[in-house]
Amino acid sequence: MTFTSNVKNELCTLEAGNIEEISELAAIIRNSYHDSNCIRITTENILVAERIYRLISKIYDVQPKIIVRKGYNYNKNYLYILELKEAEIVTKDLNIETVPKEYLVADEEQIRAYLRGLFLIKGSINDPQKSRYHLEFTVDNLDYAKFIIKLLKQYYINAKTVTRENNYMIYVKEAEKISDFLKIIGASKAVLYFEDIRIYRDNANMVNRLNNCEQANVDKMINTAYEQVKAIEKIEKYASLDILSDKEKEVAIYRKKYPDVSLTDLSQIMSVETDKKITKSGVYHRLNKIKEVADKMAKFE
Image (cartoon, rainbow, N blue to C red; front, side, top):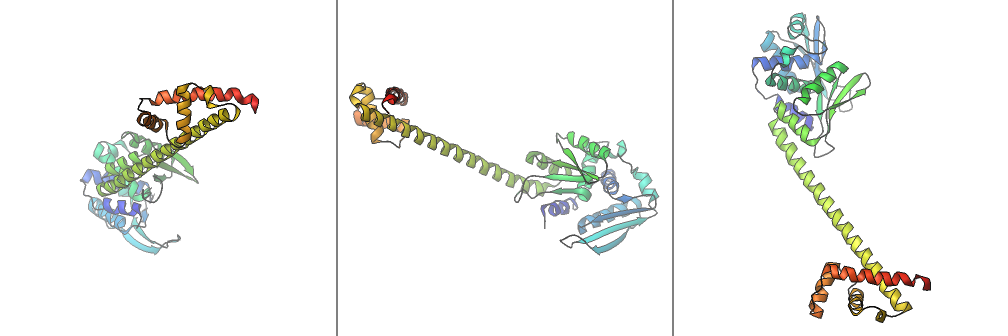
């Protein structure tokens, strides 16, 4: 079962007040086939079909006809079709237009219910454990897409839209905003699952970044030490370490002796073995002086 199905199944267990149920049903019918003679709602989720049936029966005291068909997609899922003839009373009452009337989304609970209905009939969401974060709805009209985006913006969810054939896909890719949307529509269990995966992935990404950063620092340290040893060997080849000051010569000897350690470790080793305190910056300064001497010997190469 997909994560989308799990979310929809959870939503189908929610209780709502009569006004919220009307807003939820309005979103479902707005995004299904409808005219004054017929409403036809199609879904692959039997629990969604049962919820819609209950909503229509409760609010309008009519029973839609339910048709079950084998789907035509690759998964061969069953399609559950709810069909209501002589639907003028429903479509007129819900004011099913391109953009719904304001009274259907007049307060926060109605907006949540409307978005819940939209997700039940037109929404999908990727499983965060298996793929990239992605929430989407596919709608049939650009003005309606802008209306949905406006609703989402009230909750600081910045959705985007792209054209897909003759429809418009509204999508969100920010993990935190997708989690917020699940909270808005009341999918509490889905939020907990989503947040667990999101936190795990964020921590794993942080560890990877830290490891990459640490490895980059190690590589840089090794390359720097290699260049320092090369400079010392150049001085030995074309002259002698005796041309260096005593402090520089001492550092040169220890760098050759410990070619793979960091400057911090080298300063600590020298401090212990010579019984003379030397800082990392002191080692760094003397190695730079050694490199300057070595660079002057380029004419001998």
